[in-house]
Length: 382
Image (cartoon, rainbow, N blue to C red; front, side, top):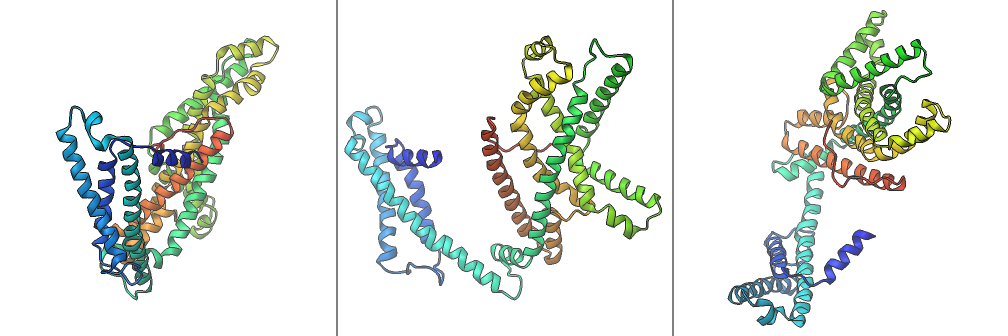
């Protein structure tokens, strides 16, 4: 709703550079008007339905040129002396900009959208892979839709379940990382806390300091070798330790290290006086962390924690090296079938972009419901 309100406010306002902006829009409309009509086009190549908006766009470019010349002549006192700067003229310019946008949209729909729809219709019905780029892209996407759908589903499953598992593992690892010796602890508890801190610190260092591709290869072949060492043959080992399972374990363990640091940062951002106040009321260190510090720290860390899902959507592409049939593996499979690379990789780029944008909007809404302020940009990879 706020986006629609901002758009309505923008359209209803008088803008200083209305001629410059709408001239660019008019040029785009004229470019679409020069494209060859398709059988689905509603505007005939010759006739008033096309000629009238075409003349409107050219007329607006002419008026814009006059306005530019007037601006150059009256550069110092344009706002005070130019008739184009008067309130009545500004309202007329705003109305004219609406007409220009409408004419451009008319040509865009007729020559752009309907033209693309006709291209899709012809490409889908083709018996062989067309030679031109866009038709070939549509043809290969349609013919290989089963591969892409399967790859998208596995990518979403890996990212979603991997992030959820990593969150609970990160809670445990973060608990180990922030342990401090308490005055009531005996020597055994102090030793266990020291070991836990050292293990969590070493885990974070190793995982964050090595590529997830290498981690995936090591995890997959280590699990496979372990099952073979138990006496299983290759088929039995593959049934238990599939590439999807190895990929899920890889994403979960990799995200755990990053989410652990995010949680630790959120907990450390809580005022230390709150933990001290909880201890002064008789709560133990664990009770103070669980009831006072942890809830606030997780709230502070929500934006970064939810962004890990977006990161995992993108980074799951490296798991194709161990044979996980995700979107990237499906893309390379289709490219190998048709020996056309650019088209299918453009499809993968668009799909990944759509997945990350959708996840970003959903997580932003989720964070607002929990009282956390999300980021406006997509996160980078781990």
